[in-house]
Image (cartoon, rainbow, N blue to C red):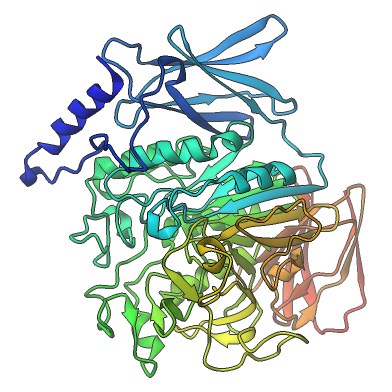
Length: 618
């Protein structure tokens, strides 16, 4: 039996399930004609479509993604590595027919060397790639970041991704990050996922990849996951997941099973899993977050103030009226994870948070010029209390935030109590873009740098959150250059320089050759910040300057002795550090890690002019 015949039969069986069971098709019948997602009738030697992998904490995780297997074919895939004697089998795993994927987990992986790998199925199918060595000795780690991979004709259609492939190869990215909406078809994730693999397989096969699903991936317009409850609408505003839980599980298996093991694997409601975790690569610690898994839906929770429950059109509304105690953003589980992650450095030099989108309302105009929206409850600017908790958790470990989803590239510095007292975020542009957004505040921004326009500087978003805009790649209304460029499509690059502790953000349009000296980024990019800029809160007093001997770049943790809470934690650069604090009082300073740790209690901070020295021997 041919693979397309088997797929048709299995899909029809799913489609014919009684509606009373709430069944959703996990696979759709192959389409003919101009269907961009139609599965090709691949040769049996090409049945392994693509693979995704990460290596973290000496554990290799890999997902092998297959085209549908025929009835009499083996359901096993072998993972082989190249050695002096040829190919050696390392592991074999069974293919899950609910998405045709096999997941490998190999402990005790030696990440100090580059290894050629081969996935094998049966006697014919072979898929080869490279598992990179951990670039721990590189001074700069480069992350290429993407969002919004639509192939719909009105989004730009099936336009080649070769410009993206060539640019990633030129910059030689150490890590790829796809922040969500890798798939836009709400009923055919598998078909669209295989198309994603065909488009990006050339760069997926030989470097670690982080993929996390967003609303369109799981088959709905917007997502407030509300701990896995059942949603009654594809719009999602009542909270929860609209698709059958098995469809959601299939999506998350495909896109996240290669990630490091979850921090706390306890499922949410309806057996839907979680994947939030940390990932250590190249001396950078990444927190992988689920912005929307626990987030509360707005419908019925707050007064409706527009044609949609999630859109606020009234500019005179009271932002505090929607910041209700019942509204959750990251949830207590993820906040506990961030609290632990922020204090655990384990060889990391810098920290980066990866998630679907940024913690503010990052756009004013939606859809078209004139479509002004005062506040968007689908953004992570709401609920404000949850947003502030998230920003505080990230700034305490000086983490920069990399995300997508908004269709609009931006750089913001977030504020909690004052402007610029939080961390920076970089929202990358969509790969292809139909639904346009603009950052166009009605009032001029405060405290702008020379040359900045009125959209930049200090602003309040639609929820009253303090944000400082440093760059926004607004689309050109009626501009030239084709749909991709006029719609502000492109990709982002984050360069993390461990030697200088500087972070450079780049934003490149589509159809640009980054190797061309004349190539230009979107206005406002590149922008470079210091690691310590990610906790921009102004000092009220200083503790004595630390002079450390016996170790380079030690971890420093500062604890407020009055409250018992840790104020911040980071790996300093060099052997000297002047700790700032945010109130006069007594503090505990911890320097070093494990057995090589010194603790100093009762250290006083009295003023901004502290000139004392605390000598630390490790």
